[in-house]
Length: 81
Image (cartoon, rainbow, N blue to C red; front, side):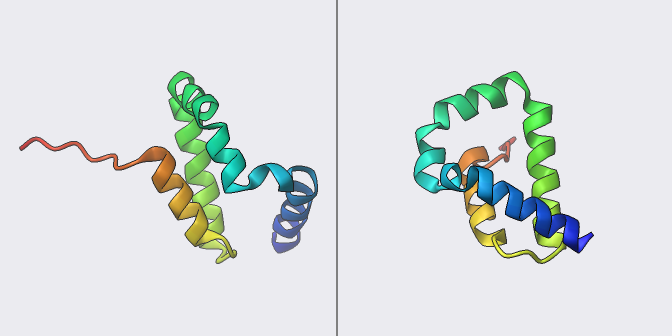
């Protein structure tokens, strides 16, 4: 399992490393929000799977991932007060 995760990380970084910067993600914010509006279950499910995999396997990057997800999804608490 560890070799599979390492292989996927190396493949992802080799092919998409330049597009995974904060500046690039922030530049595509409108496109990402449109995708979220059209496919909310897919976006939330994928974010959940990625976050659980990264934190559960103690991979580096959990803190930046938390910050990016917090920025993108915002505070999802509804108040009935």
